[in-house]
Length: 316
Image (cartoon, rainbow, N blue to C red):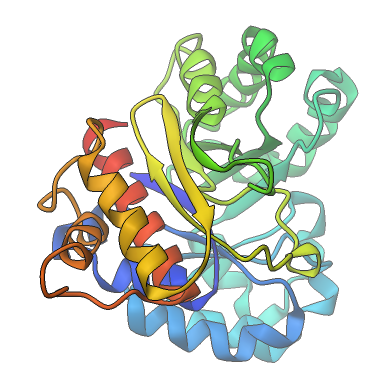
């Protein structure tokens, strides 16, 4: 099972809406929203788009701030949810039984220090121990931004995760992200290494059990909508085995978008229109006459992510 960390945004939802039916059993999105007020609309949108295998991430907020109504709404729509292991006492009583049937805890190590601190791991084990040796318990380990320094310490990361396995947790997802927060310095084409995938492989290779894979796709885990800038450029973010190919040029009109799609399909690493809906869409833009419109920012995110999902499922 692949566990992408996704925003509840129109582009991500559209990417999944164009997924083949068999992906429903292969992808379990970990959904996050930026604002508490967004839950009301996000929950039914997720349930309608991707009816099985979903996790709503509540750990990004103080759980006591998430109303009983929202917690109940998540359960009523058949979604599972993740919480901070130190906030379980803040669950509303009406959803405790549903949570205990499928307990999911997100554990964020957003820097390269806390996971190597024995006292932190000990506190974590103490909080989690009531849910040990339960095959339904799922731990979501989120390392935040993957970088070379973290990769250099992958064996130590693996040791910390192995400790959790030793005390009764064998169902663990390991997530990080490595796509940059901005592409403002890129014009033309550039390759960006998938350090998140490399970190996962190095950690997983040092473990005695199978580790589930998660990532942030073509979005940085540090992304903040408040810092989004309008650049006047158009880009294609194309995931490959070990790197992202980024094509970027000035202009956002129809011609600029078609030209960039042409650059992609002529590139030797283009997978072909049958690889994913996103790949087919890029191909169709270059036909005469075009068989797909230029799209908007929502459509472009959908293309990037849909292709990324296919890449992870088929090639890693």
